[in-house]
Length: 84
Image (cartoon, rainbow, N blue to C red; front, side, top):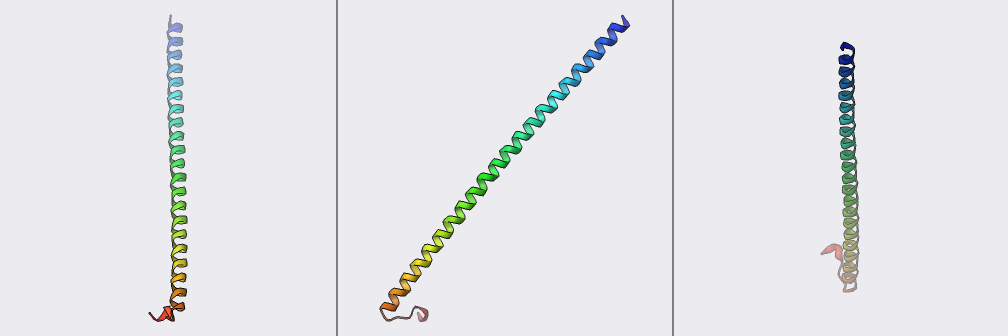
């Protein structure tokens, strides 16, 4: 009878330990999923920032070209764009 009780206690202890391990594994999986989601979000943010930088570069290039055209037109009209 004492032997049976000890075996039941041991089985219960092993069941509880297995449950704790399962819970830890699930928690680790959730943590890994959260980290993956954060990494994906950071990747999207970096891509958006890169796109914004490219748009700004293109805008600056268009503005530079516009200024060059305007300066050329002023020179055609006999004006020095540097002295305006």
